[in-house]
Length: 439
Image (tube, rainbow, N blue to C red; front, side, top):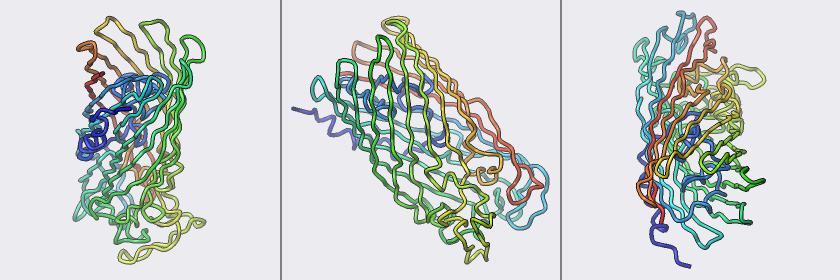
């Protein structure tokens, strides 16, 4: 067996492409899709793999792709704002200053890279590189002295997650296959302007403005895909929680001393080949944010006697498992997400293939959690997508996808000053393209 040199180079090339990038968030902090073809279908494709990025959804589909290379780039524009009403009555970091504020960093870039090679007619090995991440928020805000929403300067978080998935996929019948991806996960994080929470932190020195910290972890993704009756294909993929190293520089912010794992997630998909020119796809994706205390623990952990946090002086911080950084420390209060994705693809000629899609999910941020989610307002619930592929030759294509996430808002009380109401608001836009080459 001979593997071309390009397959050995893939991880290094992909890592060089992806490391400078800032990732983005749509379904919480998971991207709505990875493959450009799947992005045109609102991220659906668990049972209908189309390129060397398909391992991010279902590793089983890689053996169906043959020898190919896919390189893509997405331009992502999240429009985020928050509004505070009423002057409030509380001291210190509360109340927040009334008004409407908009975040900086409204254009983000994310490359992706996939390379797949057939070992023989029944099996393949490939490398796919993709990302998730936070929304890179930057709130100058307004307020006494140094400004910012929490009165200690510009506030925000920047979370980027990079995945390098090496995938082995194999047919076990003429119409079914399985696959497994070994995943190297790398993440970076920075938080600024949250120092006013120091009295509620177990480690105030490692709470805010400590620059960029990083962590690594290793995981797997498993998938199966097969035709159950002529024209109907099912797919299923599962990724257990990935245990990541701790963000030591933010051990006083995230629960469990800076622990920020990647939650388990799974997807069930169906593809209906209506005829030889059109396909209807459905994916149901589950993201278990409850796996990660830093994401799912509520702000009430700072206040409930049963999950105690006794605030202290800013220099020494608070005591109790419910304090920031504690074993049951407060987090963003996000709930698990179930996303339904629908897509339709049709081929109008040998040169043109068209795609449309729509996805819907419930709101992951309860109205009780708005004060901390100024930092990460992942409120999006719907995606509307359009895409197409233009064949350049018998073995190369250009792929495009456009996504619009309609405006959505969540309003609730300031957990530290109930006289105030905070409204988080966002809409999103993305333009993505890729080049595909088959060998």
